[in-house]
Length: 123
Image 1 (cartoon, rainbow, N blue to C red):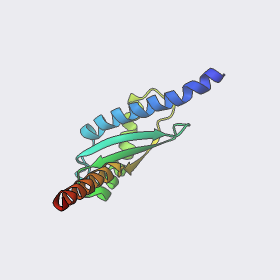
Image 2 (cartoon, rainbow, N blue to C red; image 1 turned 180 degrees about the vertical axis):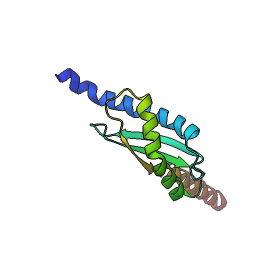
Image 3 (cartoon, helix red, strand yellow; image 1 turned 90 degrees about the vertical axis):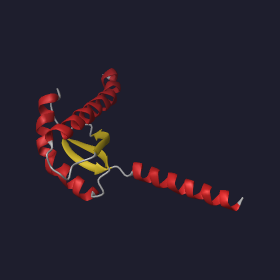
Image 4 (cartoon, rainbow, N blue to C red; image 1 turned 60 degrees about the vertical axis):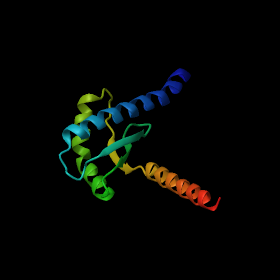
């Protein structure tokens, strides 16, 4: 029994990775909503019972709220396609969450460049 418990977290990671790969392809091919453009999936977290999945995304589209709404509107449709692809008993309900870490990283890089430029002027 202890062997099964050790394997479970690894399986969850594999399922999350597979969901991310499949969703990336499905969004590009199946979602026709104009609000959903320039989307990159950055990660998926699946609950232990596979009932829910948080799907983290970034977008170059300035209307993040619109992109999020478009993805959420397509969630049922995408889940239907996932059901055909995944070989698990329960296909999770999809919840799309904007991943702000990329934007924060870009802002930090900009601030560092600005501080370095300011320092170069003072020297």
